[in-house]
Length: 386
Ligand code: ADP
Ligand code: RBF
Ligand code: MG
Image: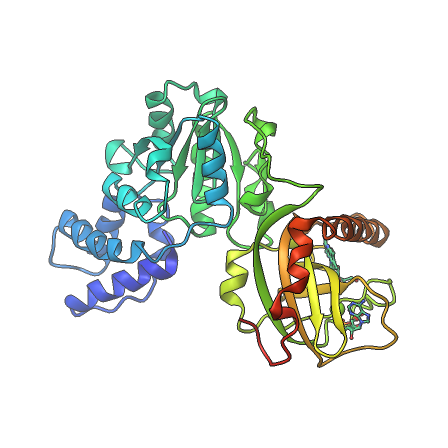
């Protein structure tokens, strides 16, 4: 369950009983079914209500928040793809069936895509027990061993025909994902994990594969039809916009390496950035006093350098005679290339970035992408993005 949202609901609820939520149960309730969670909280706070009352009240409050939940980046694309190819899918989660159903009712086209839904109220024990996954496979007439779980908030079971299983929420926390990985493996299934927090790959050794985001799923690896929307090494997206004055970077000497990156501040862009996973992107860059240029960029923590902060680092594909710190830079980002990666040496990192440059340069000549060169956002001279 999304931590923040659960706490918010719980706080409101506890106030009714004159109690204050202090977050102390958080670690205890992770991965429990709603009833198990309720029992813990009712007991810890000495609430004068039965645990099923607690469940009903909290969950009806919780459902008021469900419409605010956004799908994970790439979830809609994946569901549409599998559903178009007639791959049967199901949802299952540690929450109650009714909660799952109301949750997906806010996501356009999802309800029709899933032939099976399994809630924790329909099995004996929730994750990390494998029951939910086994029940889902059974209802789809699937062998667990030929099933794939995508463990994020999105779980997939099945191989040629598969099903989706969702975690408590469409976006959720790492501990929850890990518990799902354990459950999926215990069910004898293949598991792809999508950690929701950065730098967590090492915590998913039980998974068969760890990917940075759903954009990086390669269905063909799992016997499923491949995506067909990649174009010359790029994945087109609706354009998105960020801008601001060029700031000082971490002084890693990128320029010396021949790859200067005109860093932008991440401040004020948390919404846009949460909709787009870290990774390598490309598009067009407008500099207020100079012009519009092709651009390839990384967004994230630069695994090779293991930055503490997320950075936005556009490399403008043009030779400039001088620096342009503090100048207003606007970006129209039109597509995705790859996740950020670690490299065995600086040389291999640099070689990969040059490869990215070539991919971006070529792609930006395609009409699909070149049309955004004229986007008015690139010519605006005022501060801050859209
Ligand atoms: P920093 O760590 O401060 O970002 P870099 O070594 O990445 O330093 O150099 C980035 C600076 O170089 C940019 O802020 C910009 O002023 C300048 N620069 C020159 N040419 C380019 C280019 N083609 N793309 C991006 N920045 C460039
Ligand atoms: N850093 C990484 O650690 N891993 C990457 O995969 C990576 N990819 C990049 C791709 C592009 C197109 C650009 C411009 C930068 C990338 N970087 C990556 C960031 C790079 O480490 C950073 O710009 C350094 O400051 C270069 O010295
Ligand atoms: Mg830089």
